[in-house]
Length: 228
Ligand code: ADP
Image (cartoon, rainbow, N blue to C red; front, side, top):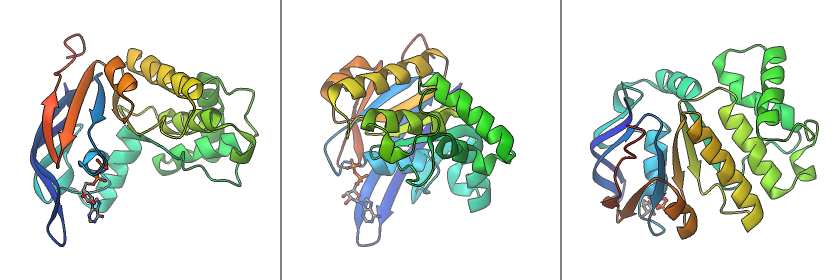
């Protein structure tokens, strides 16, 4: 089954910046994909479209069967809450709140009552092996631990699709390795995952690599046969 489908998708910004041009792309359920390319090549723009944070200015983007360009903002928010988890390079955690409440926020728009949000957050933190850091605030956690909290927040809603923008970019090699190990575990459990990375070694370790340059796909190592 297709989770992500772009057909002749483009994204232009006022002033004539063509961040993405005529992109055709299909990602099947359960794939683990590396998005690579130089700075400014359109990777984050692509992730914003796939993540339904933005709409294409030409062509179509479909996520879980829904045409992103045709949905209202509230329908897009609902689609995001139900299907998509995000992980960012700089974690984006709330500084004043502990790990459980940061993760519980991942269910804020899913209509789950607070008590259940917190109990599911604790379970998600156990899953990323942070059961011993439940009441720690971000300032009391290492970079790698912060990213594991962010991963727990992304997966607490059991998304079909996990989108990660340079998830190891701010981490040392050992912490980055733990984060990528978690990514592989989630992939093994069936989650569809797209990871933007500058790290060649990480890209080489993923089953599929899509390379961008100047807003276009210049190479695609192809679908993981086993997953499609
Ligand atoms: P990457 O993630 O590969 O570094 P981006 O997707 O961030 O690339 O950017 C692609 C191009 O679009 C760049 O030329 C960038 O300057 C431009 N761009 C990105 N976002 C905006 C924006 N909000 N307004 C205008 N131009 C933008």
